[in-house]
Length: 611
Image 1 (cartoon, one colour):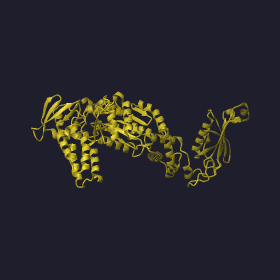
Image 2 (cartoon, rainbow, N blue to C red; image 1 turned 120 degrees about the vertical axis):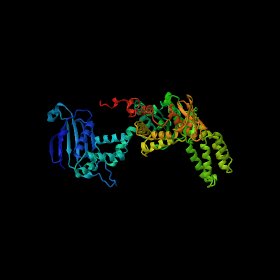
Image 3 (tube, rainbow, N blue to C red; image 1 turned 180 degrees about the horizontal axis):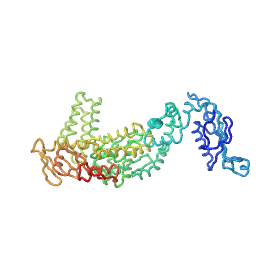
Image 4 (spheres, rainbow, N blue to C red; image 1 turned 90 degrees about the vertical axis):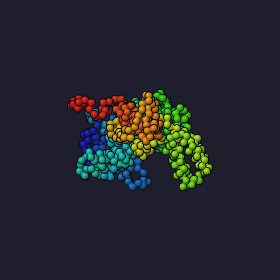
């Protein structure tokens, strides 16, 4: 098999006979082994061949260094018991021998090429026992360094091996508008287009370099290396080793703690088995005009009280004095009925009020009613559920207590005992006890529930992360970018929902009569009964209303009537210019054009002039 390539790119041909070549080149480094490997790598790319090391001779009297290579289809390192369908061993005898000679008086006298600085002699036996320019031979080629670097970039951007390979192949075809035969050769060439197995190997190497292994020590080592990068980016990270616990506050989350909403109500929920080590992830979310805003993410080992306490204490340490608008704790935590999680929150944040998600309370009761061991008549289950919902959503405490007492007196002892247990915790789940709490009208944990689904669907793409270090990267990169883009959609007038919601309230409120009492109190007459007057109280820049729809700081038509009467209202769903500025600061920081966020109505004619 003759060599039909130009060797003057990296050497000079001194002699050749048939398929045996003697080449000379200049070595200008002391790294002999690296030089040999680099030369053979370039030779492999030019000739579409692969070579493996046969022998090395590092300490010789007659020369500095020698390294021998044989074709990858030789019998070197091949098992005789190989039962795979593809047999690499073709008993090929092709070889490369590289000798780096000593530069002495005698060598220069005997070897005329030494005087020209050509101190490396390369003998190539290119007599292969197989074809080298066909599809099967191409499939055995090693991936070039440039292609490996290209795939590493894809993996750094969050692509999976499958997605990266598909993207690369499409790009390869579109960038090379050649004939069909050339496209076949291009896609068959493993140097340029890696096989699935090679892509997986590149990914494994990239993952080991960036995330370490699955051991705690490996994760800690990688995290300590990356921690400074996260801090330089404006985030906060705290790590504890035994058991492993990592608290993450991204730049957006850190800015969110500087917003007033972060001190009011925080939603907490956990998800397990998010990585291949089955780590648990606990999310903290606040409630803003545009929905949930992440405040912190904690990766920990177990869903036990001790693990939660460790995680929440680490969060306090991570946030320091900036946590929850400088208050160091939120006024309200909303969770599901996880005993370990709630006990840990109560221990670490004793000044916060813990509320139960109304949806989870109803869901748990419905499951309880359908459990046959409780002996609830099938035709009675729905009516009991309806009666409990009446208690849950009753606006008046007196009525709620009367109704729950009736349920506690039910003839079914199992149901009565269960209602007594719920009655003892009525302040945690009954809506009537939340009227004066600044919960932004939220009675469920849906904000964090939907955010966990986003994390699994969009951030992790329904796949488990490799380890906790990979999870941290996903939070800092993908989750952060998702919420940044989402906020920018709202501030750049691309989401109509806030305006539509506001217009709906305006239609209901336009005929309501508003009476000013003082700076913090207003009276609004009912639309159905003019004698019925509701009171709106302003407290801590938020509006609380005496009607069922406006409890807990929720926006209702009566508060809208105050706004239409030209009084300032902060919890309107409509985004003002100040709201857009605040949300943009939350998304990207303070470095942006503030005037760009104003509406398009002309303030003066100069704005339309061509500059």
